[in-house]
Amino acid sequence: MSQRKSDRTSFGGPVALCRNKEAQVVRPHNLGAGGIYLTSPQPLPVKSLVTLRIAIPGEAGLTVLGRVVRSMAQEVAVEFLGLLPSQRARLDAYVRSVQAQVHAHAV
Image (tube, rainbow, N blue to C red):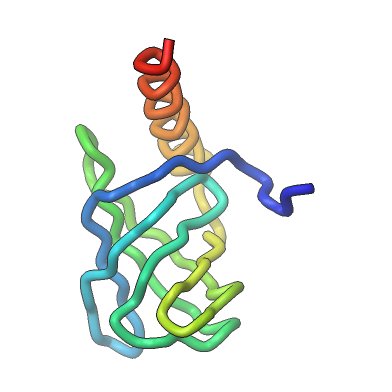
């Protein structure tokens, strides 16, 4: 059984991670309204707080606060904290649109 509270989809858009007043570009793998899974240039400790700037294709960027919930070497799972309803709706809509495109190509 999945622990995720929201659907996710693969994501390759630009993401900047800010921690300790330093920003770095990270490589995302998947994204949903609940969080993001990414590769960081350096390991991040579990429970550390980060700010993420996510460029959703076709939309204005999204800035969110997150907490590292899993960290294995440089692979990191970040849970979003305090999303506004409008931010959650934008992320959910993006995930649904990507999933619909994938489904349409598979048929």
